[in-house]
Image (tube, rainbow, N blue to C red):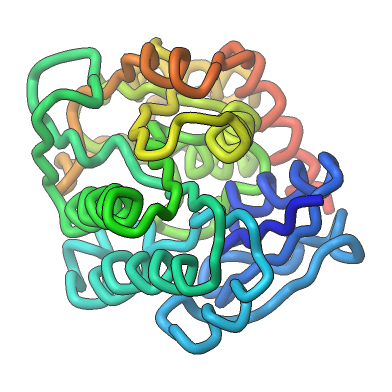
Length: 313
């Protein structure tokens, strides 16, 4: 039985991943500082995991937690692009130094493999589409730069020290448990929260910017494939769907689900936001045997049901 550590395991993606690992019969240890994660996310399976409240900037603690771990899923991060622009030093301490701490503690602890949650933000706004892993990168924010640095460190640790690593470039992940109350939440969670209250959202820019939205269960599956599939150490792979939806279309779909009428308000584009994003997932298919299974409207409907349940409590 594999013992797994999920950093950021009380967060949106991390908790879904931890829950799936428990369901697969793994021994699961969750680390989270609860700055954005929530113990509520762990409630459905809290009795089946070990939980440690702590921070990836605490290297001594990380070493203790990894002394008997086989696999690490590194989800913990400062995830806000706007906040990284406002406070790049904090972003670097968490994302750059924190990731280095995770990799070094894993190396010293004899961990077999680390799966690192990277981001499509590393591509920036370069015009070539779809985004492929062999393309040039062009980070537009400290957050994006830190994710690219994390990939570089992961690949170095694989080459220099033999620590197996796989880096997954998440595109726009959505689904149940994504915090709708944070100003830094993803656009789907913000729109869902507004719709559940019968309110209209603000759309930044003209709304014709588009995204590759990937349902959280598909992201979890990609993590498992990255962790357990043999022969893919050192791989950097996109995790998306290969299709896209504009922000204007997104709101229309959500408004229809919620029965909300009216036009959203408009505001100028935000610094660091990316205009166009869509994934080429050929490498993930080949190296990880990854295939997204959730249609966008199906995933959106599942997410809406969760938001309705949350509002009704």
